[in-house]
Length: 195
Image 1 (spheres, rainbow, N blue to C red):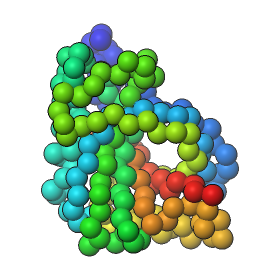
Image 2 (image 1 turned 120 degrees about the vertical axis):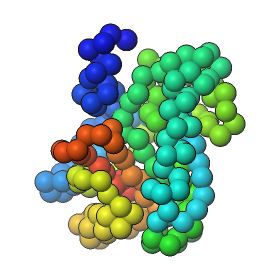
Image 3 (image 1 turned 90 degrees about the horizontal axis):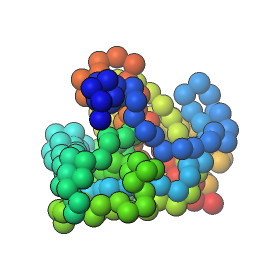
């Protein structure tokens, strides 16, 4: 990787993202997207939703970062991509104190989709995501769990009657920027279409 490309990657300027098409725009910061099938390297932890930032985020991130840094069967370095996603799954609509299963994922670059190296650690795994349609809300800053839930609720309210066609119990967060980028940050909530 060239020095220039490394610098661009560090600032999120030259990072591969999953391909999608916008099906419908719901407002300045909301839309319905259809994503092509993708592959992700992932890791999971379980705990209270509100403890994600303090207890789980860094541990999960570095498990995946170690994988792309060469902790895989081929000892192969893989380019960083975005977004970093976290799927929150629960039996009831997620609140700050909900016990949730959190699955963090790094998108596998298209050039590595076939023959993706198998993780060396049993804590990480590869998963295929079929084509999916998601309702998305975009916002800035360094969000807390409360921020994510407020944005989720705003998205559900904007969907109105159409919300019944989406999984509003679970949600996915997507972060596009490195932690040291202080302004113009991009965060999203995704709700998967189920009908």
